[in-house]
Amino acid sequence: MQGTAIAQPNIALIKYWGKRDVARNLPAVGSISITLRELFTRMHVEFDHSLPADALQVNGAADDKMLPRIVDCLDRVVGADRPCARIASTCNFPIAAGLASSASAFAAVTVAAARAAGRVLDVDTLATLAGRASGSAARSLFGGFVELQNLEDDIRCRTIARADDWPLSVVVAITEKGPKAVGSTEAMEISRQTSPFYSSWVEQQAHDLETARTAIAARDFEQLAAIAEHNCLKMHSIMWAARPPMVYWNAATMRCLQTVRQLQGQGIGVFFTIDAGPQVKAVCLPEHVDDVEAALRATAGVTGIMTTGLGGGARLEDSS
Ligand code: 2P0
Image (cartoon, rainbow, N blue to C red; front, side, top):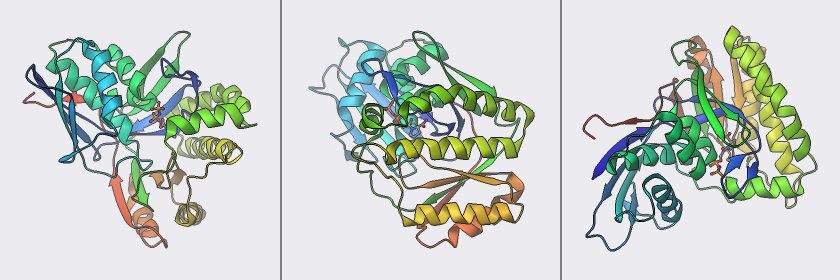
């Protein structure tokens, strides 16, 4: 009764921000993301009737903070009458720092738990279950460019272009490794309840999704860059205008944006996006990755760089 799965985080180009149903964790808007290749979370789940309680280890250390959400996820996948589980997670990038660690974690644990329980579920069901735990996790079941569609009563994810169809690169500039002060779930609710810009955000999302979809289908980098940066800045402006205001950026975040603008001025194919954290993700054409890496590495306040291509969706490990 065990299973091991690997999932990569994804970075939204058209962002999910806000929920229409908090209890079922349904997003207020659709989103489009790219699944990354080199960053990953590996989850091992083992059900054991002799265990007195569920236990989670993250990178070798007990983690009681994340445990309740993992427990809920296991209950949804397997049923609440399941045996207790030993869950071990390893992650090769900073956790809870705006690098979509919850996306890869919940995608991986959903797949691993289904295997451990002997449940054979199709990818749509796995994505729906992962999305109940963390909205962005649904997208990590799929590879390449992924659209999360907001259906009337649920969500559905689809790969709209494969990683090989348009092999972009992503350079992540780390500006701070610590966990964020306000989690996304709470920040989304504060945004929905207090930000004067929230309703326009929801109204305009269909337009942004359509623009990005068209740009991806045409492999139009400039059009994708323009809509992704616009959508990202719009999402952060919702938070800046909320009560209390929430600013995930630091001074180095802003300096990275200036670096990206300078690169664009030199004709380099690159754009930025920023999630619920201070890291900057620079999406670029593969031929420009060395220039982008060098420029971000030289930006004051950048403490680390991670470069990755686009990858496939969550999967069971071969031995699982
Ligand atoms: C996204 N983010 O589309 C957006 C952009 C962060 C900024 O989805 O509350 O951990 O668990 O459903 O998926 C991060 O939020 O939120 C996120 P919950 P999640 O990637």
